[in-house]
Image (tube, rainbow, N blue to C red; front, side):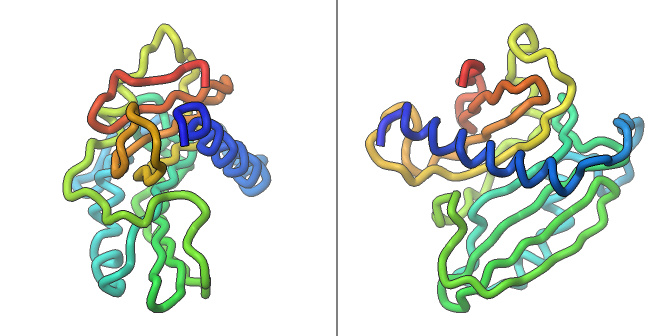
Length: 199
């Protein structure tokens, strides 16, 4: 699968997620910037992961994070003060169950489990890396001259398993960030300067 095909797959996925998002969150509250953080949560994906980690660790050994989904993420890489969430979507091949752990803008956790014979449609099923950059670092890598919007509607964080593309190696973590102005940069975890703002 070549670079163009990979971008098409990610783009279709992001468009679908934006469609679902627009239905669920239509009429949501106006934007409120986060002015302070507590000791446990600053609105970034790393702080959300720390809250979700005990629940994620309690899942079966073969439970793998397929992707992380962010909604209503401010241009500094953190959730807004009054809306948005980070969701960790996992799947177990032995239990045939899909688990989702959600951390909202206030740092509150919710979760649900559904029976699912098949893994999520996106994500690799490759074990998640032990270290990965925070959303604040990734957003800082995006050229502000190219992206003028303040809010990313949807952020999809996946680990690639496609073959046939030298630009994005197998196992590489990739961010797809859809901004309110309609542009969707791709940012590779180990090379935050790779961003396709015309995607």
